Every structure is written in structure tokens, then in C-alpha cells.
Length: 88
Image (cartoon, rainbow, N blue to C red):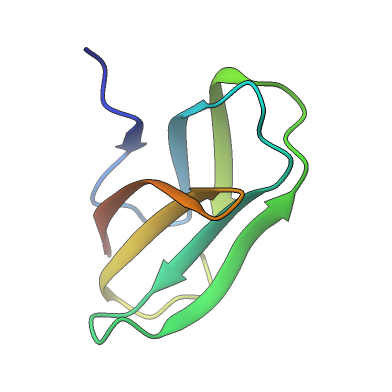
């Protein structure tokens, strides 16, 4: 069974890619970037997904300071996955 979310490369410097399994009935996909306190610092993606099933989404994180962050992915209001990323 594949995880709902894969993140690469990690650590990351400029762009991070997410491999996510989008449910067939998804109307809105949202990717949030959070700091270690759980505060949302960026909505990296929010839109109707262009496709469902396995999809790769690339996010620009160049403006982020070095540190540890969380990525959370939601389909409609259901969390699909969460991953830590290290920004170098």
C-alpha cells in the first residue's frame, strides 16, 4: 500500500515535489506549509485538481528561511497526508 504523500528531495533548497494520491471525487486540493508551531505560513496550492489519482505537484520554497517545516495536503476538508521537510 503506497503512502498518500511522498515528498522529494528532502532536504530541499529551492523546489520541493509532492507525489500525492488525489481521490476521484476531490473538488479542491490544498497544500499548506506550516512552521514547527503548527502555524500556517503559506498556502502553497489551492485549486480544483487538474486530475485525480497519482499526481506530482512542485512547490517553490526559495523564499523560506533555513529550517524545519511541515507540509499538509487536504482533499476538500480531509487531510491526505503530512510530511516534514528540511529547508537548507
